[in-house]
Image (cartoon, rainbow, N blue to C red):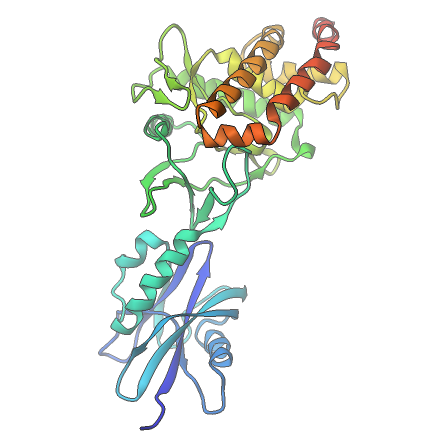
Length: 377
């Protein structure tokens, strides 16, 4: 019995999405979707054919990866074998026998009418897409816990997730910018949030303009949060929104703030959110962005904290006065939560964060009065 003719298909994956191509010919398959590819020529390897077919059908250069799934029968004497592929150069376009392309996230794979031969491999690819690409961020999440899948971010959930999603939906409905949109959970039980533009703030971007953005944005969040009416089970436990409290982000460190063209474009990692006093959020931000390391000098520290506070609409001296109790409280909460089994807080303890904060507070105590005096000057 002669060896079957091999048709190679490209499972082209980018940012957690799979490329699907809609057939325009022949008539019996027109309008249905497939993985792009074509027949292996005599004397040609499957990998070489994959590269050639992507160049001819899509106008792109790809790097082949591993074979995926079982081979599928086509018409008599032909089989389909699919290879994972990575885009190296170019933007795919439908050049031969196709009239449309779509990049599909794992939840969208069922939205198109796949050719029967492609379906088994599409099911395999779905799991690869859900693996996503790791994102870097704060120190609470474990390595690989936070991933990008298409235009979404996937994170583990906790008892607090319902409250966080309700808060984000409330902020979204009110038009608060730079907030991720909650999109439910995925097949692995992870929360799904919209991907925000920008990159985590780098030390070179800790400029007063960005601090002013942060202060003004935080005031908007706090004001809108006063009308939040969702669940009250937060990571810090059940905390009612009473007594003049607002919902605080509680983790406004630079790794959780995204910047684009020097301006604030997103704030992520909302799992620490909970009701509290507005000054507590400002005090934490002042510590993380300005005061924890004596990098600027007293006069510049005063100016930067003043910028943050003025943009919010709160006296800078009040913010400075709240820094030491806010950070002492953070240390106590981290240690208590770690002892009670919170894995994220255990990672902070392992990383030495409580000791790092305590050492920073001791150094700050020696210059606190000087910073206050500089504010008044």
